[in-house]
Length: 482
Image 1 (cartoon, one colour):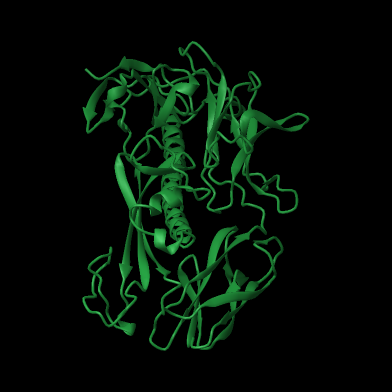
Image 2 (cartoon, helix red, strand yellow):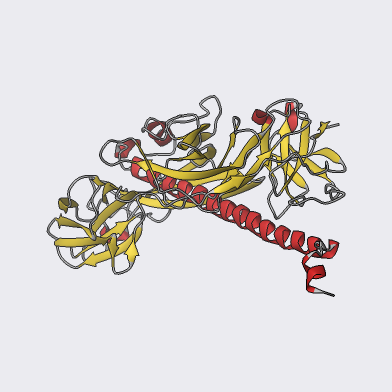
């Protein structure tokens, strides 16, 4: 073949080459979505458990503020419900519940008295004692109370629980020695400046032979004296404590090992900008066949791990600079969830690829206003009118008070298009508008969804398939319980 002929050869790519390219794209995008889902699921589970642990600590610390004679199984709960932040979110029921970031936690409290054998046993027959006793040598057998807190919550139809126990000393008893904070450097309950450590000076009464220093219940140091200085290393030696709220406590012990009343301080760290959100992903969703809200852009991201993040904002990059996407400012709205990790641009520019980025928010230590992180990596949404096929079937069944939806996978698009692989399914209840979405499937279970405690609601459900471009199929439904 002559050089002139080769230059005029208009041979393009073969079908096999195109299919291999599509396969590589599908594998890459599928991996990214799986990583986002896995990270979100693990982070959500960790945040919920952290919130439950924090709630148990709040209840135990609240118990220490209840008058000792009222700290019993019948009156303690009523006292604790009056503590700010521990109010019952379902006062018309018998359960004590507290809602944090749209998750409802159920609290169960147990209180019993302990007769410490260090001062002899006494008569414990008339009180709510944990055990022991049975003598008359000790005139005051109620040396301290043991408070046990169970906090449970539901996620994905599974009940999870954490349990913590604490001790409340009887100030009128001959329990352990008392201890007090005498100084702190830097001072105050909020640390706003970069420092390597926070130093606490403490003083115990005579008779103390040891003082233990703990942060959020984890032992950080011990001193064998009546005075001590403790350094809480927050940014030193490769250790960096994330911004957030922490409970610092000290307890003194006598020679018999008997603890005195614990003294606590709540310290808030607020030094750093939050990290930019990771795993930002999304695309153009024409919502063909839904009848409303056409041509939107869907953006999602992974939750930040810092405990002081209060929300997120999503920006659209325009010709004149970034523009805050309407409805995607999750900061000052008290009804929004600070853990929310997706939003929709309902006014995306028509017909042109558009870039977006996300910022995380914490509280500015000077003004108290939301403070933005650096921008995340940008994602570009490209307009499209393609969509995947519907799921093949959809059924609803009842299971232990919940509605379980199951369906067959959506048939593959024929012919395939770039990004045609289905990556998850959306679930709608009592309508197919954006506000009717109640969830989406994860990578571990693509063809079923449980709507917990919804069997008595008489709801109708729809399911749609979503491809790598974030375009949805026609919604399949409605179905309801038979």
